[in-house]
Length: 531
Image (tube, rainbow, N blue to C red):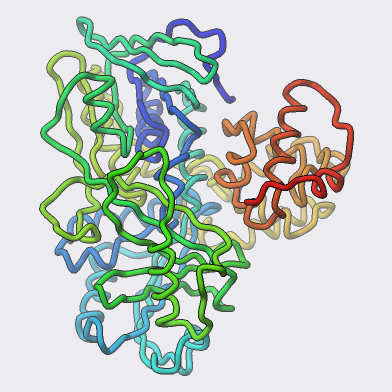
């Protein structure tokens, strides 16, 4: 399924989408599903930047209620359950505990906010909020003894990078051409079309003739307009860096936490990859190179300090096993505080000639709705009358019990895993459970022809077999260790230092057809590059 620019000189399409983050792939998917011919180009890997650097939540945004963004919260709450049904393998419900800090927001205000959160949109999958006694609830055990009272509510978890890839897969299966590691260098109107010049990683130039261009470049949206398109816009984005840290697990239950900080910020502490706790995010104005974003020592200290305010077990920067940072392209508004900038979006539609749609702002929870509205704008300009369809469609792998999204797929996902384990009893249960969560119903495609462990091919790294790497390279545009260990999965967190070198060497040998001269164990001993 993977499509590259190899041997391509010229492409003709209805829609050229620039940007392989969540908004770009969502628009490509929706447009392809309405019968429009689509080309999407991404200068790096899919979800290489902002879209793999989120807090991994599908949520309405409880704190946005303080800024009176009721419309945004309602839209996100509606989308929360739509998305859970569409991809129950990479998204699932999660309960969040907010310990009440007497020095922060008063209890009555929190209760009022949670009442609104429960009732702004219809809920079928998620239980409502309630007050809890932290001295009697399991979530209180890891917290300091001065936190006695708390509140619990529901939201959703998502594997953000996989969400991007699944949208790209669905787009491709509906006819879109997905070109990763391909940069759009220029676009120019010529009559009723756009003439675009792309360049792939081998330096090959690809010409695209498109009836419409969608600028979904995320942090680069304004830069693309001013540079490649030679145009200006009345809208702009405010770049805000959000950083996260990962430490060894701080609690032994499945609830997440939402903590209040004296500066008014909200930070999450979320169970992560079974063995870890994910803590974030920060909100810092960003003015640097958007392709080179990293967490600062000050941000690490900030997150550690906030964690230590609540958890009995103290952490220091030395306890951070992994961190990541991303720049969120937020729609510019008058907010003085970066954390108060709206997470809503606006679509700038330029129809002075061939259509040009630019996406400003947005959040991962509302990507599907944003994409639907975007294609609703461009479709009439392209004489396309097909209606929107994504609200009632599963993403690849999400059709675990039925071809259409349903509540059962969310509520009975453990049964789906049990059925897989019954059908593939020869596979270790933890490995099959990981496959189920990553690939859903596509696990059968991944394991096609495999009846024994020998059929899985070489175990390149612990728990990573050749059959999976081949699948990711063939079906999901993976081309290197970083793609596989940190975006298509988070196996990098569980593997020893140097695993990326081993996998890159294996991929290089596989690509060149060379046989490998020594064992994985030998390579592990020789590898010296740390995570």
